[in-house]
Image 1 (tube, rainbow, N blue to C red):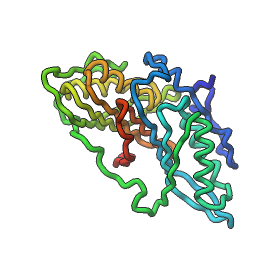
Image 2: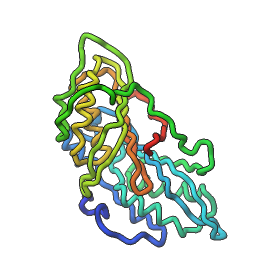
Image 3: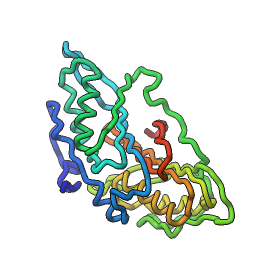
Length: 276
């Protein structure tokens, strides 16, 4: 079984000079989920991991460089996630590859990434000059970052901080830009904006903010952090509907944006934020 410690993450490696799907390094989700008490065939959520690739280039049949932005959607139900550095190296392997047209590139990306993830992956290519090229806009919801509170706990994640008022039912969306966690291998910081949309007992905003900040020294993958947030909110606040969406800042030309929600929830759009 692949583990992150077997990957190229945190190691010095040469950039590939040719297209090589073997560079993709899948990591089973089961290990992280077992630590959260989850079993893959009985997940309490649906979801998607939305990846945006900003450094994607190839050659046309005459050798002229081409560029595009790519949106990649990997289902949360897939057996594997793809380790991000291997993803970066794989994408850079196309830089000197001659391809007939963008559709040939999209087909290769879909085939290779679906094989690595163990499930069907969707890919959309957008020209950087297109009006649809990930326009910057705010993450919808009520910002809670201005709540005047003292904070002194920065890890490990503390679900006991969460509180909700069982006597007041609401449906609302809350947003914070103060989230930080750390790469489990390199220790580098991962910064994100988090959106929590829910229906049910009103979640205490100060408590939610303290809880999100309690990830500040925590080391885990983006996807596992979001799944932990979903599970903690579900257990501590008992919402009837819940969706957690984290928009992480890019690293190595990639950003990863996991979304987890109660079954029946529609998958999200892809609103690039100013920090992305």
